Image (tube, one colour):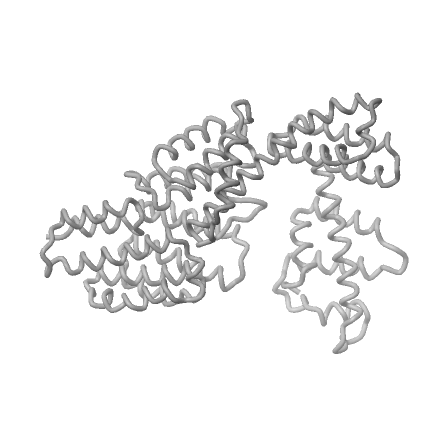
Length: 475
């Protein structure tokens, strides 16, 4: 039962007693005759969703309770019931969305009136949509008015000369439609550039030609969000400290105006910092992450992405704020929406970070064996945890022996093709410099040479803070 769609939907839609009451009224109102089993299923889920591990929370017990006989091998009646109940839950989800976003009611009404050839009602509904959208924040208003614009513009009768009243609204909608198109193009560019850097997605000439055109569409009088996304796309295309500082300054200057894109632009800042030759890179990441946590920007629809979770723990531990890292783990673990196996690996990964920051290197080596996911992030972390812990324990021969397996993975493994050139360079440079540090007593180069090598990577090296500390410890 725990893995069924209707259980997950029921729990999500009925998270509070008030939500459950509203859901119950909606479902009961939509029932047809002879659908009494639906009410029994509702009561069953309501009771056992609070105690999901109860021995009676299973299909066999439910079937017996509903039909007063053991469940046969073919449970077609139960599947049909689940299907009907699932449709009711989906209808409630749509009802709740329109109730919370009434602006879309006007759009749906307008389209419905158009199909019935009720032109006056069609126009009035869409004009109501325009007026109701004006108080919305920039991105949502642009989306709504883009939809209104297309609905009116492609309606044949908008070309009639006696429709001047509607033409004024059409001009307003067109302006916001163009803003929406520009917003979408710029956001698309940011996303493609980030995926290219970190996940190896290819970019062809057409992308760069379109990218240049997108930037040309940005006008001096464009809304702040358009300017911010244009700046973010330039930053991700050519990361440098100057563009980073500009984006950060403008981001906080317009922080109260960008609403729904606050999280996205914060991610652009954090992504751009990865591999950037910034003297205070980790400090910058730490401060941005703290702001994101305080403002709740990493939690979307009650869920935190596992990559955000892992990166926050990693940076907090690098900055030696283990207490903040442990507090974050304790308070945010509940927001991860992942399978039990992935959750266990996330916990192990976080425990490795905490143990290393506390210099418990033997524990790191013990914990890393429990990283069992085939995802490349976890496999690479498993290697790096081992390299660092073994170095700290003076088992440098194990670090050198691990070179071939590490580089073979980066070059040849099927899932390694999803690692972008930025990440590959950072991991390769990390190992190569660590090998030079290990061989330092037997080679003819100085600590200064090693520091210059680290500097020459220009930020494209993983664990740069730790490597610099190890170089400075050399005698």
